[in-house]
Image 1 (tube, rainbow, N blue to C red):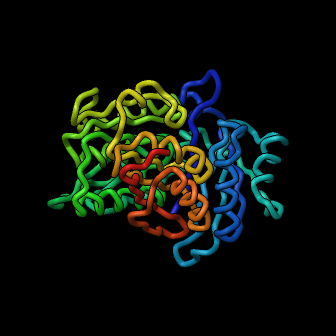
Image 2: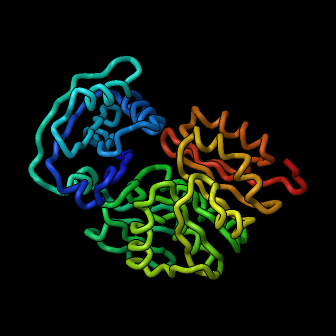
Length: 324
């Protein structure tokens, strides 16, 4: 399994230009918990240099506890770059191996080898892999070169499984929002399960507009503002007039990070209809108590939970009559 934390581009550069420059890689080997903690620390580093791409993965299938942290850079690593990566390791960094890579699409290279996943009624794969010709299964093809992974992350797979479970439990959705959408995958999945719903996909990163539009067209997902269509916009959390105008929602999906989930819990609660559904992911199982406590204060109660490795996926419902 690979846990990828990817940002494309930097100030003044297009994603393509950012990917096709002089490329270097820093590799550190460490036990799995240390690498996972470093990835979480990276996501909490709001001043992180967007030119540095990180990923963590197991070294080999027969060595699941031995992991590597890899950092891709579009330049020779500077002292400040190495210091920033070292600072992600709370107990001190392991030794670094630094190498210059051949000229290549370095973000695509960082995610090569991603195998298709099967989660709930969905099959997610890169275009290099074949679709799964199976009745009742929806295929989504997401290029490996795009931001925020391709669904291989355990949290995204968990969300796909939980959405399928919600549908089987009789949940009805007419209006949904996917906050922090990245590739648009979870918004697409929601629309596949509830084809007449109005879907809003948002992300804080403007790069995702083109990413979502390209993926929607490639996967036959209609774009627009009506039922059965996806509207994409750039927003910081729930802070956007169109997100507010299109609410309240039957379903809000947020596969982001524990910190933002806690901060956004009141906004999620206000954005839902009474009895509405909230699907949260991106939190480690150890972070679940804090996230659930914030949700309880926002009038949200747990309906079901799923654990994928070290990650929790939470389905919550807004209490009927709640006035928070």
